[in-house]
Image (cartoon, rainbow, N blue to C red; front, side):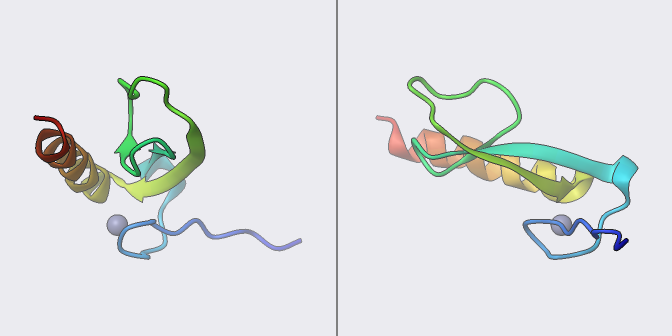
Length: 70
Ligand SMILES: [Zn+2]
């Protein structure tokens, strides 16, 4: 039986299970979310991130939302 190694979606680093933060990728706007999904959100699935990368990724989501909304 092989043990699947979970890698960070952002940096590709192999993650320890307790450090994994799952973020949901929205098909609606292409951003990752941990909560507060956009209106009419269609999920592309959840992807694993390291805790640091998850924070960076969520900042990017917030920036993307700011720039796409008037
Ligand atoms: Zn990472």
